[in-house]
Image (cartoon, rainbow, N blue to C red):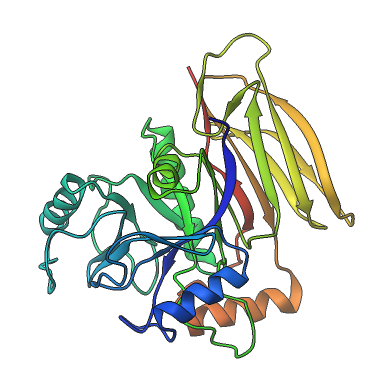
Length: 330
Protein backbone atom coordinates (compact mmCIF):
# COMPACT_ATOMS: atom_id res chain seq x y z
CA UNK A 1 0.00 0.00 0.00
CA UNK A 2 1.30 3.45 -0.90
CA UNK A 3 2.25 5.62 2.04
CA UNK A 4 0.93 9.15 2.51
CA UNK A 5 1.80 12.06 4.79
CA UNK A 6 -0.51 12.69 7.76
CA UNK A 7 -0.26 15.75 10.01
CA UNK A 8 -0.61 15.23 13.74
CA UNK A 9 -0.04 16.46 17.26
CA UNK A 10 1.02 13.73 19.70
CA UNK A 11 0.78 15.58 23.02
CA UNK A 12 -2.37 17.46 24.05
CA UNK A 13 -4.21 18.24 27.29
CA UNK A 14 -7.82 19.04 28.22
CA UNK A 15 -9.68 20.21 31.34
CA UNK A 16 -9.52 16.57 32.47
CA UNK A 17 -6.01 17.32 33.69
CA UNK A 18 -4.72 20.89 33.50
CA UNK A 19 -5.76 22.16 30.08
CA UNK A 20 -8.23 24.95 29.38
CA UNK A 21 -10.39 23.25 26.72
CA UNK A 22 -12.86 20.40 26.99
CA UNK A 23 -12.16 17.36 24.85
CA UNK A 24 -14.79 18.50 22.34
CA UNK A 25 -13.38 22.02 22.18
CA UNK A 26 -9.84 20.70 21.73
CA UNK A 27 -10.91 18.38 18.91
CA UNK A 28 -12.63 21.22 17.09
CA UNK A 29 -9.60 23.48 17.59
CA UNK A 30 -7.30 20.84 16.12
CA UNK A 31 -9.61 20.20 13.15
CA UNK A 32 -9.40 23.89 12.28
CA UNK A 33 -5.59 23.58 12.10
CA UNK A 34 -5.97 20.98 9.35
CA UNK A 35 -4.61 18.07 11.40
CA UNK A 36 -5.26 14.49 10.33
CA UNK A 37 -4.75 12.92 13.74
CA UNK A 38 -4.21 13.90 17.36
CA UNK A 39 -3.32 12.05 20.55
CA UNK A 40 -4.94 13.37 23.74
CA UNK A 41 -2.57 12.72 26.64
CA UNK A 42 -4.03 14.09 29.84
CA UNK A 43 -1.92 13.68 32.96
CA UNK A 44 -2.67 10.34 34.65
CA UNK A 45 -6.15 10.24 33.09
CA UNK A 46 -7.76 8.48 30.13
CA UNK A 47 -9.80 11.19 28.41
CA UNK A 48 -10.19 8.93 25.35
CA UNK A 49 -11.44 5.48 26.28
CA UNK A 50 -11.08 4.21 22.71
CA UNK A 51 -9.66 5.79 19.54
CA UNK A 52 -12.28 7.29 17.23
CA UNK A 53 -12.84 9.64 14.29
CA UNK A 54 -14.41 13.07 14.48
CA UNK A 55 -15.17 13.78 10.86
CA UNK A 56 -11.95 13.01 8.99
CA UNK A 57 -9.68 13.59 11.99
CA UNK A 58 -8.47 10.61 14.01
CA UNK A 59 -8.39 10.93 17.81
CA UNK A 60 -6.02 8.35 19.32
CA UNK A 61 -6.23 7.16 22.91
CA UNK A 62 -3.37 8.30 25.12
CA UNK A 63 -2.23 9.28 28.57
CA UNK A 64 0.78 11.11 29.99
CA UNK A 65 2.08 9.15 32.96
CA UNK A 66 3.22 12.01 35.13
CA UNK A 67 5.47 11.98 38.17
CA UNK A 68 8.00 14.33 39.72
CA UNK A 69 10.84 12.27 38.20
CA UNK A 70 9.70 12.36 34.57
CA UNK A 71 6.82 12.14 32.10
CA UNK A 72 6.01 9.28 29.71
CA UNK A 73 3.38 9.29 26.95
CA UNK A 74 1.36 6.09 26.46
CA UNK A 75 -0.38 5.84 23.08
CA UNK A 76 -2.93 3.46 21.62
CA UNK A 77 -3.86 1.44 24.69
CA UNK A 78 -5.20 2.02 28.19
CA UNK A 79 -2.66 2.19 31.00
CA UNK A 80 -3.26 -1.09 32.89
CA UNK A 81 -3.00 0.61 36.29
CA UNK A 82 -4.89 3.25 38.18
CA UNK A 83 -3.43 6.46 39.60
CA UNK A 84 -1.92 7.56 41.85
CA UNK A 85 1.14 5.85 40.39
CA UNK A 86 4.29 5.09 42.36
CA UNK A 87 7.07 6.77 40.37
CA UNK A 88 9.85 7.26 42.86
CA UNK A 89 12.66 5.27 41.21
CA UNK A 90 13.80 4.19 37.72
CA UNK A 91 12.52 0.73 38.61
CA UNK A 92 9.03 2.16 39.18
CA UNK A 93 9.11 3.66 35.68
CA UNK A 94 10.41 0.42 34.16
CA UNK A 95 7.60 -1.52 35.81
CA UNK A 96 4.74 0.65 34.54
CA UNK A 97 6.32 1.00 31.09
CA UNK A 98 6.54 -2.80 30.86
CA UNK A 99 2.87 -3.10 31.86
CA UNK A 100 1.91 -0.63 29.13
CA UNK A 101 4.03 -2.48 26.53
CA UNK A 102 2.30 -5.74 27.46
CA UNK A 103 -1.03 -3.97 26.89
CA UNK A 104 0.09 -3.05 23.35
CA UNK A 105 0.88 0.63 23.93
CA UNK A 106 3.53 2.75 22.24
CA UNK A 107 5.93 4.42 24.68
CA UNK A 108 7.36 7.93 24.28
CA UNK A 109 9.74 9.61 26.74
CA UNK A 110 8.57 13.22 26.98
CA UNK A 111 10.79 16.34 27.00
CA UNK A 112 13.55 14.42 28.83
CA UNK A 113 15.86 17.40 29.39
CA UNK A 114 13.23 20.05 30.12
CA UNK A 115 14.49 22.53 32.72
CA UNK A 116 11.12 22.48 34.49
CA UNK A 117 9.90 18.88 34.24
CA UNK A 118 12.52 16.66 32.67
CA UNK A 119 13.75 13.30 33.95
CA UNK A 120 15.63 13.43 37.22
CA UNK A 121 17.65 10.30 36.54
CA UNK A 122 19.56 8.65 33.70
CA UNK A 123 17.09 7.60 31.00
CA UNK A 124 19.54 5.59 28.89
CA UNK A 125 18.24 2.30 30.29
CA UNK A 126 14.53 3.12 30.07
CA UNK A 127 12.65 1.42 27.26
CA UNK A 128 10.99 3.67 24.72
CA UNK A 129 9.69 3.42 21.16
CA UNK A 130 10.35 7.10 20.61
CA UNK A 131 11.47 10.26 22.33
CA UNK A 132 9.83 13.67 22.26
CA UNK A 133 12.76 15.65 20.88
CA UNK A 134 10.72 18.78 20.18
CA UNK A 135 8.31 19.92 22.89
CA UNK A 136 6.17 23.07 22.48
CA UNK A 137 7.60 26.12 20.65
CA UNK A 138 11.30 25.82 19.90
CA UNK A 139 13.64 26.49 22.83
CA UNK A 140 17.07 25.60 24.16
CA UNK A 141 16.03 22.49 26.09
CA UNK A 142 14.87 20.89 22.85
CA UNK A 143 18.44 21.04 21.57
CA UNK A 144 19.48 18.97 24.61
CA UNK A 145 16.77 16.45 23.70
CA UNK A 146 18.07 16.41 20.12
CA UNK A 147 21.66 15.82 21.23
CA UNK A 148 20.64 12.88 23.45
CA UNK A 149 18.61 11.36 20.61
CA UNK A 150 21.45 11.70 18.11
CA UNK A 151 23.84 10.06 20.57
CA UNK A 152 21.44 7.13 20.83
CA UNK A 153 21.43 6.82 17.04
CA UNK A 154 25.22 6.95 16.95
CA UNK A 155 25.23 4.12 19.49
CA UNK A 156 23.09 1.99 17.17
CA UNK A 157 19.74 2.43 18.93
CA UNK A 158 16.97 3.05 16.39
CA UNK A 159 14.79 5.25 18.57
CA UNK A 160 12.27 7.32 16.65
CA UNK A 161 11.98 11.07 17.23
CA UNK A 162 8.63 12.82 17.57
CA UNK A 163 7.36 16.28 18.40
CA UNK A 164 4.44 17.32 20.57
CA UNK A 165 2.92 20.70 21.33
CA UNK A 166 2.15 19.77 24.96
CA UNK A 167 -0.80 22.09 24.43
CA UNK A 168 -2.66 23.29 27.53
CA UNK A 169 -3.93 26.69 26.40
CA UNK A 170 -3.04 29.67 24.26
CA UNK A 171 -1.31 31.97 26.72
CA UNK A 172 -1.68 34.90 24.33
CA UNK A 173 -5.43 35.24 23.61
CA UNK A 174 -6.72 35.00 20.03
CA UNK A 175 -3.50 33.45 18.72
CA UNK A 176 -2.71 30.00 17.36
CA UNK A 177 0.89 30.08 18.53
CA UNK A 178 1.04 26.90 20.61
CA UNK A 179 -1.42 24.43 19.10
CA UNK A 180 0.27 21.94 16.74
CA UNK A 181 3.61 23.61 17.40
CA UNK A 182 5.40 21.43 16.52
CA UNK A 183 3.60 19.13 14.10
CA UNK A 184 4.64 15.52 13.59
CA UNK A 185 4.28 14.58 9.91
CA UNK A 186 3.87 10.80 9.67
CA UNK A 187 4.41 8.77 6.49
CA UNK A 188 1.86 6.00 6.97
CA UNK A 189 -0.18 3.62 4.84
CA UNK A 190 -3.47 4.94 6.20
CA UNK A 191 -4.88 7.20 8.88
CA UNK A 192 -5.73 4.53 11.45
CA UNK A 193 -4.38 4.15 14.99
CA UNK A 194 -2.44 1.00 14.09
CA UNK A 195 -0.92 2.48 10.90
CA UNK A 196 -0.02 5.85 12.45
CA UNK A 197 1.60 4.36 15.55
CA UNK A 198 3.41 1.70 13.51
CA UNK A 199 4.88 4.37 11.24
CA UNK A 200 5.93 6.50 14.23
CA UNK A 201 7.73 3.53 15.81
CA UNK A 202 9.47 2.80 12.49
CA UNK A 203 10.83 6.36 12.39
CA UNK A 204 8.74 7.48 9.43
CA UNK A 205 8.21 11.01 10.72
CA UNK A 206 9.35 14.54 10.00
CA UNK A 207 8.89 17.15 12.72
CA UNK A 208 8.19 20.72 11.68
CA UNK A 209 7.07 23.83 13.50
CA UNK A 210 3.51 24.05 12.10
CA UNK A 211 1.12 22.00 9.93
CA UNK A 212 1.79 24.03 6.78
CA UNK A 213 5.38 25.04 7.38
CA UNK A 214 8.80 23.89 6.15
CA UNK A 215 8.72 20.25 5.05
CA UNK A 216 11.60 17.87 4.28
CA UNK A 217 11.39 14.71 2.19
CA UNK A 218 14.44 12.44 2.37
CA UNK A 219 14.73 9.43 0.04
CA UNK A 220 17.33 7.04 -1.33
CA UNK A 221 15.95 5.54 -4.52
CA UNK A 222 12.66 3.98 -3.44
CA UNK A 223 13.71 3.98 0.25
CA UNK A 224 12.20 6.52 2.66
CA UNK A 225 12.90 7.57 6.23
CA UNK A 226 12.78 4.57 8.53
CA UNK A 227 14.08 2.22 5.83
CA UNK A 228 17.43 0.44 5.79
CA UNK A 229 19.53 0.51 2.61
CA UNK A 230 22.64 -1.44 1.60
CA UNK A 231 25.48 1.04 1.20
CA UNK A 232 27.24 0.88 -2.17
CA UNK A 233 29.81 3.00 -3.94
CA UNK A 234 28.36 6.36 -5.01
CA UNK A 235 25.20 5.96 -2.92
CA UNK A 236 23.29 9.24 -2.71
CA UNK A 237 20.22 10.55 -0.94
CA UNK A 238 17.71 12.94 -2.47
CA UNK A 239 16.31 15.84 -0.46
CA UNK A 240 13.26 17.93 -1.30
CA UNK A 241 12.39 20.90 0.90
CA UNK A 242 9.30 23.03 0.61
CA UNK A 243 8.80 26.46 2.17
CA UNK A 244 12.43 27.10 3.02
CA UNK A 245 12.51 30.46 4.75
CA UNK A 246 15.13 33.22 4.25
CA UNK A 247 18.36 32.82 6.22
CA UNK A 248 17.57 29.21 7.12
CA UNK A 249 20.23 26.52 6.74
CA UNK A 250 19.78 22.97 5.48
CA UNK A 251 22.26 20.38 6.76
CA UNK A 252 22.52 16.73 5.76
CA UNK A 253 24.27 14.55 8.34
CA UNK A 254 25.89 11.20 7.68
CA UNK A 255 26.12 10.03 11.27
CA UNK A 256 27.71 12.96 13.12
CA UNK A 257 29.35 14.46 10.02
CA UNK A 258 27.70 17.27 8.00
CA UNK A 259 28.07 16.12 4.38
CA UNK A 260 26.02 18.89 2.74
CA UNK A 261 24.98 22.37 3.83
CA UNK A 262 23.03 25.13 2.11
CA UNK A 263 21.92 28.55 3.40
CA UNK A 264 18.92 30.16 1.74
CA UNK A 265 20.32 33.67 2.21
CA UNK A 266 17.72 36.37 1.72
CA UNK A 267 15.64 34.18 -0.62
CA UNK A 268 12.46 32.21 0.09
CA UNK A 269 12.28 28.86 -1.70
CA UNK A 270 8.88 27.38 -2.36
CA UNK A 271 10.62 24.15 -3.37
CA UNK A 272 14.27 23.18 -3.56
CA UNK A 273 15.86 19.87 -4.53
CA UNK A 274 19.38 18.50 -4.13
CA UNK A 275 21.26 15.26 -3.49
CA UNK A 276 24.14 14.30 -1.25
CA UNK A 277 26.62 11.45 -1.11
CA UNK A 278 26.55 8.85 1.64
CA UNK A 279 30.08 8.03 2.75
CA UNK A 280 29.74 5.57 5.61
CA UNK A 281 27.32 3.07 7.07
CA UNK A 282 25.06 4.21 9.85
CA UNK A 283 22.41 6.77 9.04
CA UNK A 284 21.55 9.99 7.21
CA UNK A 285 19.20 12.65 8.54
CA UNK A 286 18.39 16.26 7.61
CA UNK A 287 17.83 19.43 9.66
CA UNK A 288 16.69 22.94 8.77
CA UNK A 289 17.93 25.47 11.33
CA UNK A 290 17.94 29.22 11.97
CA UNK A 291 19.46 31.71 14.39
CA UNK A 292 18.03 34.55 16.43
CA UNK A 293 20.21 37.64 16.46
CA UNK A 294 20.34 41.08 18.04
CA UNK A 295 17.46 42.31 20.23
CA UNK A 296 15.26 39.36 19.21
CA UNK A 297 17.83 36.95 20.63
CA UNK A 298 17.98 38.80 23.96
CA UNK A 299 14.18 38.96 24.14
CA UNK A 300 13.93 35.23 23.47
CA UNK A 301 16.48 34.41 26.16
CA UNK A 302 14.45 36.47 28.64
CA UNK A 303 11.25 34.67 27.60
CA UNK A 304 12.92 31.27 28.04
CA UNK A 305 13.98 32.12 31.58
CA UNK A 306 10.55 33.49 32.50
CA UNK A 307 8.17 31.00 30.88
CA UNK A 308 10.21 27.81 30.47
CA UNK A 309 12.42 27.94 33.53
CA UNK A 310 15.54 27.88 31.39
CA UNK A 311 18.79 28.63 33.17
CA UNK A 312 20.57 29.39 29.91
CA UNK A 313 22.51 32.65 30.07
CA UNK A 314 24.84 32.02 27.15
CA UNK A 315 24.22 32.46 23.44
CA UNK A 316 21.22 30.69 22.00
CA UNK A 317 22.02 27.67 19.83
CA UNK A 318 20.73 27.38 16.28
CA UNK A 319 17.09 26.33 16.55
CA UNK A 320 15.40 23.71 14.40
CA UNK A 321 12.67 24.63 11.93
CA UNK A 322 12.22 21.02 10.73
CA UNK A 323 14.11 17.72 10.95
CA UNK A 324 13.80 14.15 9.73
CA UNK A 325 14.19 10.76 11.25
CA UNK A 326 17.00 8.80 9.54
CA UNK A 327 17.41 6.49 6.63
CA UNK A 328 19.73 3.69 7.78
CA UNK A 329 22.67 2.31 5.79
CA UNK A 330 24.33 -1.07 6.26
